[in-house]
Image (tube, rainbow, N blue to C red; front, side, top):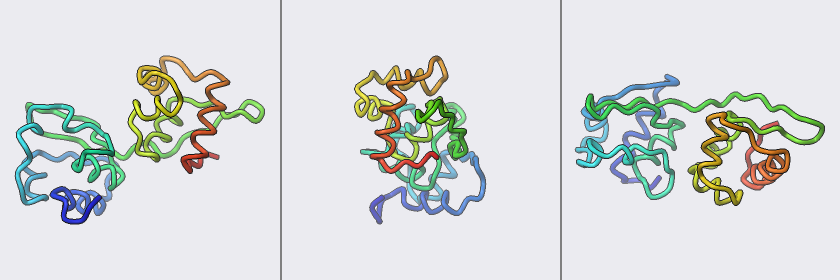
Length: 158
C-alpha cells in the first residue's frame, strides 16, 4: 500500500488491533482515517469487497491481515475478520487433497480474488466459489494443479 494513501491510517489501526475480529461503524472508520468515506461506501456492497488490486481501501484491511467479513449498510457497520490460517492438509499418497479451507487459505495468502484464481487454473469463478463453500471438492487432477499453482505462488501448506 502506498504511503500517503487515504486508508493508510486504517491499515495502521488494524495492524495494532489484537482481535481476530473487529467491528467498526463507518463513523469510527472516518475518525481513524480523518476523512469521509465516499458515498459509494454507504450504498454499494462492492466497495467493501476483498479485492487486493485497484482498491486502496481493501488493500488497507488485507494488508493488516483482515477481510471485510460482514457488512450492514443500513447500520453503517462492517466487521473485519482474520481469515482461517489453520487448516488440515490431507493427502492420498503424494497428492494433496484440496478442501474449502485450503483453497481459501491459498487465495488469502496470494491476495487473489476467486476470479483471479479461476484464471490461473483455467476454471470458472463459480467453480472456485463452489470449492470454497464445500459444494464439491476439486478432482484429483485439479488437486495436482492447485498444488503446482500454490508452490509457484510461494504458498506453503505442508
